[in-house]
Picture (cartoon, helix red, strand yellow):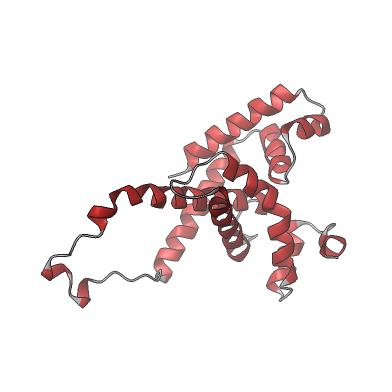
Length: 194
């Protein structure tokens, strides 16, 4: 039913409906972009975890993208969602890899480090959120200006869940040129990440 209701709307329109209080849009967007998340998780490994754990992390990144997207400040939602998912996955993988240092992480703190004034806050300050948002915007802009017109079109199709052979058919290009474009996009995206 949601596909009939929302399927023909652009992401910007869907996000405006979500901001206006239509909660069902969130489910639709999560389902729409789930193939992208699944594709991104296939290429990664979570130490001590299962594929579903990584998929769940990717979906959290997608959820954050829906919640944090600002059409006035960001590129296309699909690009923003891609970056949020990649960042969430990389954070989860990094945290998982740190578990190998568990014996060091569970050592007893020195007495002077144990007082309440030195405790770190687990909530993010508004300043930190603004800095994170500006950093994400700068990354999106770096990626946007570094991609050619063809690469932007390939990325749009790829983020919509199409395989490279389907993209090639739609663009009337050989599959190898689409594969090469995806490799260039990955390289440029990695270069833009801090």
